[in-house]
Image (cartoon, rainbow, N blue to C red; front, side, top):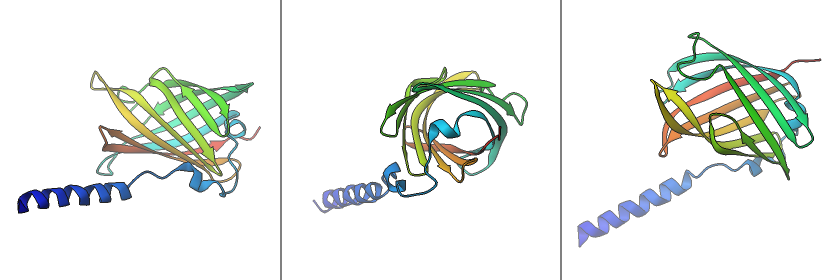
Length: 184
């Protein structure tokens, strides 16, 4: 009986602890400035520099990306072209084309060739949060990875991006990216 009570207590303690680790919601950034206008930031050419770190924090890969972005009505296209530090990207594509749809109230839906289903995005204040599943080619096998992708507008030309990657709830690594709009 005592062992059963200990187990129940352990489960309850774990549930309370994990509940306290629940994700941050984008709404908490509503008052932050400058206000992010996704259509304005991703319009024209945006350049980025980033890195992928494994779950231990070791930098595995660095990259440069040039994004050509345009909008027609409520639909945007982000044409991303990557240059990888290892010259090939380890199975990651040299190009990804996103199609974004503004559904109103700060919400967006995105699709791309290696995104499984739809990416769901929402903005508030200076923040954007994307959640999606990406099909990654790793050593000749496709694995499906969950992305929790956060972007924060610093000023009208600079945005910082941090993406947490996981599988079955376990951290795999993260991508850090600095984006800068080119001036016309």
